[in-house]
Amino acid sequence: MNHILSPVVRVVTLATLFAACSSASTTNPDGASANGAANVNVTATVSQSVSLSPVSPTSGTNVTVRSVLTNRGTSSFELDSRVCGLDYAGSLSLTLPPGLLQCLAYSQRRTILPGDSVVTLDYQRVVSPAGAYTLRVKHAVQPEAWAELQVQVR
Image (cartoon, rainbow, N blue to C red; front, side, top):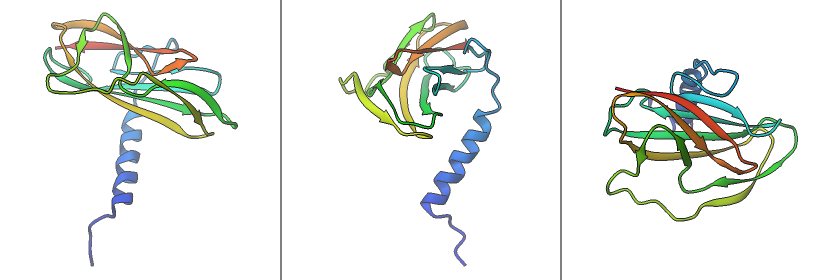
C-alpha cells in the first residue's frame, strides 16, 4: 500500500493546517494586531487578512507578507487589487531583497465570486533596527483599504 499523499490531499492538508494556525491570532477591533497578523473589512462583505512570516524578524531578514481578499457575501464583487506586490506604509522599513525581480504591473480589475479569495504573497527585507513598528498593507486598490500590523523586530 502506498502511503504517499496525492498532491491535492497535501495542499488541502497544508491549507487546513495553515488556516488552523492563522485562526489562533487575536485581532483588535481596529484591524491592528500585536502578533504579525491583521484583518480589516474592505467593504461589508469583503475582508482582507494579512500575515507576516516570520512574525518577529531580525533586521536584514527576508519576510513573506501574505494578503488575502475574501468575498464573504452571497453575490459577486468587483474590485481593483494589486497584482505584483503590495503597497506598504507605516514605521517599518522594508526593501526588495537583492536579486529578486518584481513585475511592473500595479493593479487589475477582478470579480471575486462568493466565498472566493484573491491571494498575494510578497517578499521583502526588513531594514529597520530592533524595535516595535507598525506595518500598513494595502491589497485592495479600489475600494481602498489598509490593514495594520504590529511588528517587533528583534
